[in-house]
Image (cartoon, rainbow, N blue to C red):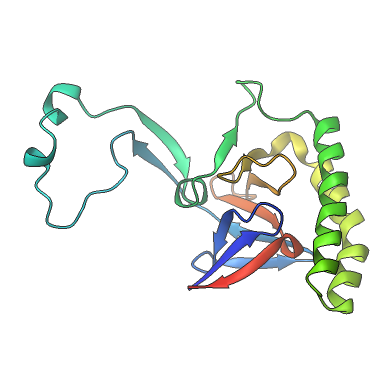
Length: 178
């Protein structure tokens, strides 16, 4: 299995278990949305829930929320508009400028190929334009560390209006085999 980490924050943000599609210097992958209960974190195999925690019956089923599988699997934080956490379009544009500079610096530091750096430089303006044109439709997620300078993962829906997909920066990811 391959896990992809954010090149800036080192947060795990994607794995090869998702169907990744390359669209220029952006990657997209379809996600699934499902109902997660507050007490659904994990259950150890062979564990006896009644012996482990006697509160289950008294507490009900817990609060249920809709989550994206990518958000849940990588413990991302959703910057919700209604809570005032989603950056404005201008603030996000400013973030992208800073992010692009940091990714370019990191690519140079890590000895990325000249072709990779040239591809990033050539594709970044078009990708930024595409993202900003559609920014109002995106839900914005941040990695577990909540590093403001790191990649913001963008969630939108395919043309069918049902299938969510994530958009990530290809050059902002570092591959880690596990």
